[in-house]
Length: 593
Image 1 (cartoon, rainbow, N blue to C red):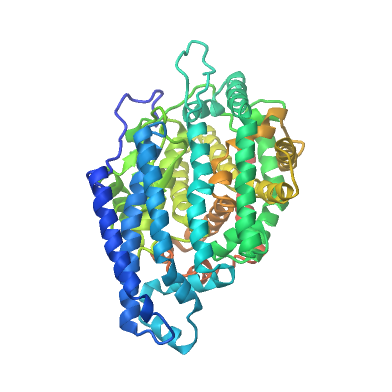
Image 2 (cartoon, rainbow, N blue to C red):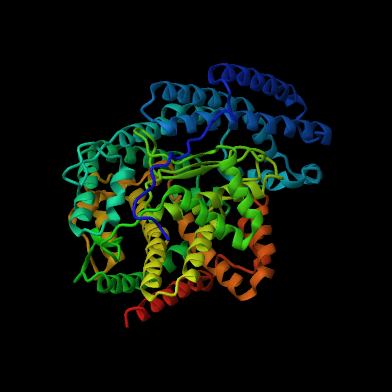
């Protein structure tokens, strides 16, 4: 059982020595090695034509992989160091230097990808027979051919992005990660980070929940002009490049193309989410009854059921997650433990640290890095299970090339969300107390709302915002659009205070990775379907699931899902996930009868 106060143990902080032992010295050494490999690749350029031999082609691929590995090592170090403390000027300067050098690398090797995209016919097919697991990467480059520009144009875009989109992303991070917030606790004098403030969103006191949200939205809205204009500039850049220059059908189609997902599948997914919003509205109606709140406000959607706050010491959280993983697959548990053994996890909440949580799989043979902002909240335990799921996914696929061990975005959430399901189901099976079962169901449904419907509506906002910005929308107009979508999402069941119109400027994903968020909806609904299969098939399902993870990004999402007989373009596939959620809501209702 969880403790009532977080134990004062030191939370783990990662070491980045497995990437670079001496940043300044290694930067120069790796830069020299990059130049050496690029020069060798450039010498092959005259031989790249319609008659290129397999030997030359494979040598080129080997050089490209080595260049990618060296670049990834540099890029990962600079990103992770910066994430540790975004106010560290040395880390920021190092990150800027690395981005500039890697942009130059991209420009110098660009010719190889462009040659391959244009290389067609029997000769190209014959070269593909020598490529093994890198084949999907090479065929994916062909998919981008209709949207690829000339080499000089691609070079200009790479250079532009270092002082354009990339610079705006950094500006957003620097500004928002430096924000501090007043604590709802009157006696507290130390300003809080966003992660520390977010703990109060689930506070037993309705007043403190409200104060926490009001503080968050007040601070962000105080920068609405700047953050709004940054967003508008990023959206215009997305349109200028993705639609005007590369001729994608729509803003979201840019993401779909890179994800190798049919537009039809994403349209069906988002439509199914909106169609089933009533399921979550019914959940919130029941939650209001359980929490003895006459009508939920947006301040209350994560309200706990008890007045007593429960925290989980980090060591207990680790134990719970490892046990859940081990109960399904000892292999996955062993891989998850390796993240800790290699000191590749950073869990402490420190000033200037980037908010949220992530997993960074850098190289196939290198244990992934996991970042958390652990505060001891119950949600943080699930986040640990989630991010370790990402890590084991990358480690399961480490036998592939650097180009194909990363899962494509829509399947990237599979292992992470499945890990959360394992944790949730393990906890549910342990309890016989109806009140505790009610609490666990509430927690699961809270999370499913946050990772399915909420994420789908972020993408709905992006769809409308991209269209409106192209027509000259104002920042206030975008806020009004966001508020209207919130009201549609919650219906008459949850009241939406006006200040929530500014919530969108606090969502990093819509800035850094437009239309990324549908991957969460995709991943969660997919996992609900997979977990139902596991419950029906038992242990015979486990090898199929592990095979899916081991596929990494070596095939298209559709091909990886074929052995599991899942069709992402069929509404019934997505609906099956919502049917499972509806069943959970019905189970919740039984606990209050």
